[in-house]
Length: 113
Length: 109
Image 1 (cartoon, rainbow over the protein chains, first blue to last red):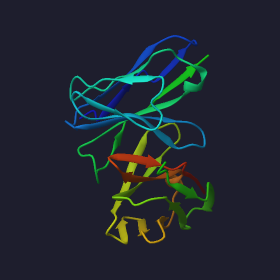
Image 2: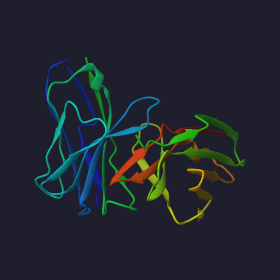
Image 3: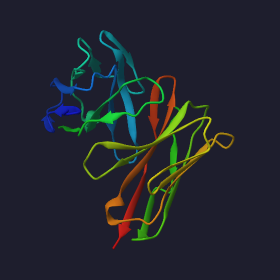
Image 4: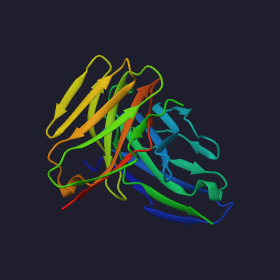
């Protein structure tokens, strides 16, 4: 199993551009989530999904959209990139909502100029 | 926010010594998890302790949980250079995981 995969690994955007960060998992997990990691702030939850067709907002959802059309994929869209969105983005999946290990992808390092 | 807070922010120890880090959180939780992150990599799950458990062991790791004090500790015994990493606690509440800012551990040879 590949686990949780993320593409791209690195990305540079100009302010105002849009893009989609890809996340896929091959473990048939129902629960998937997106986090951003900024220096000294730990991980903050952006959006999460409890199954195909169901998504909800996390702690810092503004400026991001998600959709979950299949169990495997959970893309994160930046609508109009801003320098404040410069961060490292991690996707994670887990088999259950509670009391379950989260499996993290390797991350996407995004810089917005 | 439910975010846990780790203490200390950074820790430097000699190989073979023990490393202890603490996590405090604000409200009731279902469980608490510890993760490790090596530089530039994704997080790796270490151990999960449920709210009705007080102590748990996994290899050289020992985790305690005191729900009355809303705190947890992670002990790494007989540290190795490979233990150099950042360690995060994550509290499970309301179907979400909330992470602290982490403790950066450096193990000197």
